[in-house]
Length: 142
Image: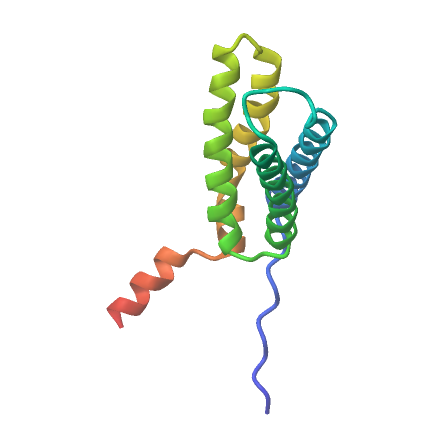
């Protein structure tokens, strides 16, 4: 007899919402890269090498957001840490826009970051990714 495999956990709505928000953030970063590319030839304090590097960083960040959103949707636990780190940086980045007199841009960065941060700690999302702390402490007790 073959052992029965446990049924895969059902994906909570919070995980789907996080994945969608991460993909939308990725699109926003790629849109910022496109806008940056259009203005890359203008005069400024940074030389062309620095501008191209910044463009590369924007493209890489947008692609990374897509990957994290995709693998989070598939239930890979490592994506939680990546999504969490990105959102913390996004909150910090939003604060600079509040200070710079651009509150709408700041809110556009802050609202999805706050939503993702809250949803990442939803008990159903935590259970979907697996409670690593509980299983690690059980293993230490045995």
